[in-house]
Image (cartoon, rainbow, N blue to C red):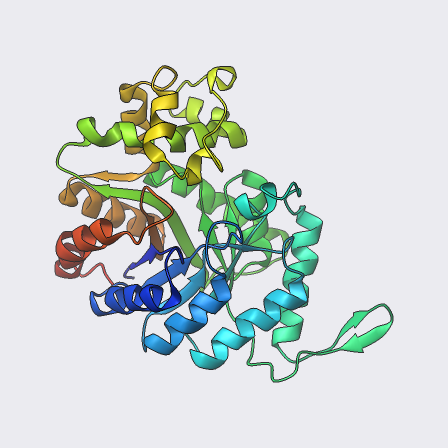
Length: 344
């Protein structure tokens, strides 16, 4: 088995510039681009993916991630169906409970029962079959066929749900092989509940990535991510990794939140008295792909041996194309993976 390497590119610039960025990523050897979906932060995800689809020919395109709260499942089906028509066989639909797209407009995340029904509805419409709304059966005209549906998950229950109903999982709970192996067990438990096999299942690990020869110097940039994990219910997961952060001491978030802060320097400064550089470094070691290129390469190989089929690399920022990350990974990590025959 070989591992694929994808990168997150937000539609943070004009669609012409976005399409050029995706074209560059394809040319530099990445396997996939993931486009985040948050209507107040970036251009529309599906419009951006369609533009990128027309500008490329081989790279996989995925939502990173959409939800079924801000868009009705029938709208999601129509949107992704449009992109598939441009790039057949190259599109994946990642769905989550909803983060900034939902919270910034005062909505609640999706519940499991809503996710189950929504995934079934999307699949049914994409397959060209009928779905009953209010006693009337309807269908999606010109359906292009079902695309892989990848469920984003961090908590144990949602990871198990991905194993039960997903074509894959986008694991958000850390990038160490130890944490991923625990989540793969949960995926298997979910699959066992319905008697399904995970053959062909896509296990994608999302990880913040920073290639640096001075991780001790740079780890402080991760403080907003540490705060985000704590504020979204992940304090216990950090504690199991030996990371103690008191939620009560975290100050009000920078706009719109710590993980998508418009001013990262301000977000980091707010947390300097709460999260030490040593804690941030421990977080980098356990939850991120962080350090010299050789270490990042080694960590990706460890994930591949643990059963991961793809890594989804994120940069530290939301409103610029991650050119530095693309350069570092394409220039040093991908060649090393190819040389070890661990890259697809």
